[in-house]
Image (tube, rainbow over all chains, first blue to last red):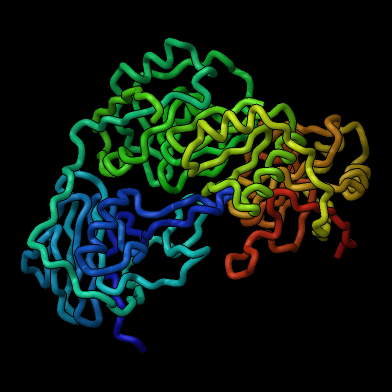
Length: 289
Length: 205
């Protein structure tokens, strides 16, 4: 048995394995998946000397605890949280050495939603269609972690980064989402388009990896007929019959039958991944580049 | 044909029929294979084809809307045969919609050649067209919380087969043992856009 492994002691509310996802299979109904806060996942990989495509852990609100069977370098980023090794405080946002058998505890998010944990060598569960990401919509990839899960680790190939603390954006106190209108803004009343881009919304507690759900004024349709299913992109702002816009995140369905009024700039989706329930949202219309 | 910009790097090309969408999809796949179209995803659907991950969507939009799309090439691909037992719990309801007897639903369905118009809903779930419009059926008023894997089902103009157990509102007319999705198999999906399909009745066991 290999000692390059990580035993899960406390799985937390929802901790999943994530990498860059599995784009390129949307025509088969396969969501892209992958880390919701992609820049945070990329940063922690860089900090431990992993390649960008190495798989990391993505926690949700309450963190998790793991015990490596051999000495590893880890880095925790994304949502700020308390990090301890065998109970002793360790750095967040920097490489941390964890001895074999020590307990690495990633505490609850102080702010934000999702912390990312990179381990030197990466998590090497069996890839599915080229990716190790857990996809909560379709069930592809490894299931969410449970207490007692043992995850295989790869061999480190490069030394970790020589930094004290890497700067990371703070989770948003107000989530500003730049949107380009369309493709189906003409299915809504002009008033609905004004409402979306001028009135306050907030992050609904029903949000998940599939979509950022919102609370706020309902958007009224100009065309009430049924929209034949069509392909949808990451960041699409889809409006279901209740009129509350949903921003599609990484595990979004590949086709949908509700009109997409606007699309959020990809660069703004990392902040969306860190916006806790109740965070105010402002949709700002921008011109297409 | 209309090409609607989607975000900064995608295009939703809308046509007026399912046949046109399939022809456009075939043409776009041809261009990509040829090397003249660089794009991350080509996602056909009922009346549209989505192109995601384009360097210059505006240029492609003007080019597409001013060029002729050749009709879909003759389908060279082999027909995938799906063994089916027409034993679904909604067979009588579908028969009533069609104005035929339940066993005639099976005959009509098994005598139709289908093709996969597009996929979605779940990995490996194909939306199959081929039945004439008079056989369109509504979705069930109340969706089932669990439809078993292998269920052969109808909704609107489409036939679909559930790759795995999931909630669903389609009308169930039969069952197949075919494995629609297996991620350890290459290709993982038995059905992909453009695949021709026939349902072959098997005897009751």
